[in-house]
Image (cartoon, rainbow, N blue to C red; front, side, top):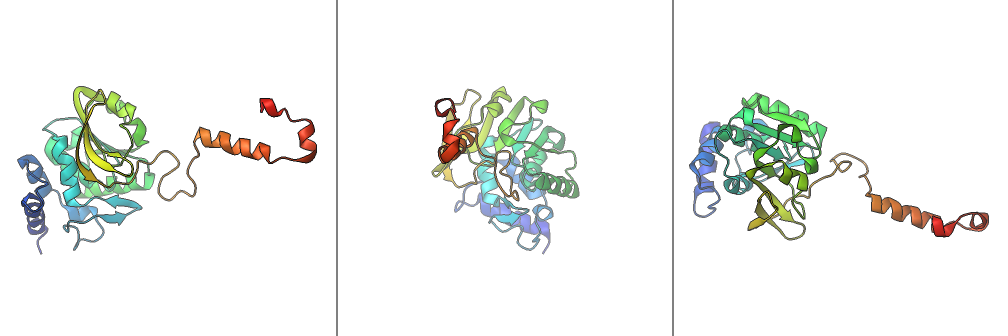
Length: 245
């Protein structure tokens, strides 16, 4: 079937009252324009409203994309940062609204960055900038941003992202751990929580998909060192200054 017909059917279902997750005309037009099948390995299932796993990352379902982008409320020529580029589909939808040259996207996984660049180029959005960065520190070189979208859950808004917003900018993100909700966060950190959601937690450096071991926190390093010291026995006890260790 013609992909454009499948896209129209997909968007029509998102606008239907049974889902009611897509209301704005600009987002509707953008999602009807972006060739979602260019971003997924399975062309036949690309327009189904379900998530996919690809390159070790989750490709959001179309309804989830709509639930994130509706409150983001991007407008033409807004400067936008996507944290958690994934395969690039969300960045492409935003590029349709604000213009490709106004969209920056980052991901902590280099393999995913390469995949996103390739797919965005194939789909006609080669002007979207995708770089390998730790999402928790943002992309200060292109700040300030009118809108920032974080596609991973965090217990609180990362301060560097808030600092990279314009004075009237907004951050949209999944807020929480076990209990999450989509939140619209102002530059001062105040948040308006919307409906519930379930996202993977934000990765930090060393926790990328495909790595064998994550980086330990400094607190864990100290705890491991203390346990190791206390396991020592015998002659070592004579010269170790336990009070100063």
